[in-house]
Image 1 (tube, rainbow, N blue to C red):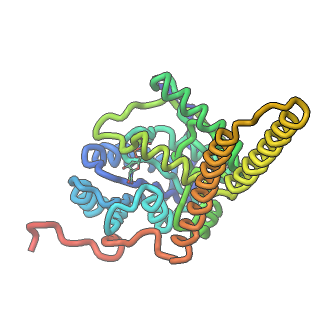
Image 2: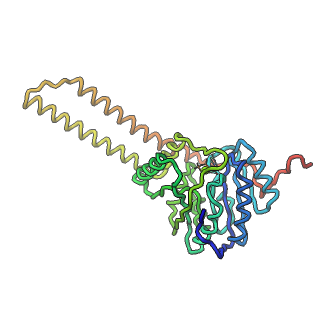
Image 3: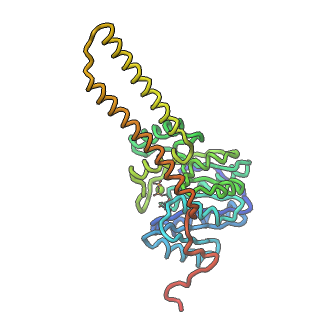
Length: 327
Ligand code: UDP
Ligand code: MG
């Protein structure tokens, strides 16, 4: 695999790497090994923030072991599974570096890209996005994904790029901007785009997952898409209004046509067909519009409660629990 040349490595002053981890027991040691080999080349000081998002496997035990062994590792454990968005926020809030890299814990985001990210950052970019190509992805999935982004971009105000996930480097001011957004329903892809600042993009070759399982199902993806659309603007409400107007217009035209038929041509109009058609169309419409409004009300409800996005159970910087078996 070829990565953009990064020799001689350009260095930044301090770099934090934030890794949300959910059931990544099989990957953490390897990730830590690779990071420890790469980071000294690109930063004068660095910090690896491992965030355990309520894993059910040995992720916590392994990450705690790393934090004990390596003073550059900070380990955070959330009180339960809050989802990747919350885990990332927790990591960002505890990252102290001038630049922060966010990457997955499943080795799908190549550590070897970090020197290239840092180098672009030093060229003056606040966000350097590592974008994967879709070479080995199933064709159907790629097509669906492209279609998804096309529809998505017409629905929301901030443009999103296909293939650019959460793997990226952020400058300190970009991180501060992200943390300042206190919404509970976080949709990072949108937030990253919303904050603006100069950004650059670097492509890398897609890596298939080595160990463990992707936690994304079709159902989860659909929910994620809905979250994205609804948390970014109120366009769906406007769409509902337009559909309503069109329906009313069509109905009026139909009624006029019927009246002309009866008055001019003497046609007998079978009334019940019209009635049923109108009833079905209108009640369907009302359900859709109610559903859309309901979604927004639900979101307002969850935002006004002002609950924290996550709760911390362990922060290794505050209190490193004793290793089991040690008195
Ligand atoms: N992740 C998390 N909380 C979750 C689900 C996932 O912190 O509830 C982490 C996971 O450990 C990984 C990253 O988010 O580091 C991406 O997850 P995954 O590989 O399942 O997603 P995909 O790569 O398929 O988009
Ligand atoms: Mg993955």
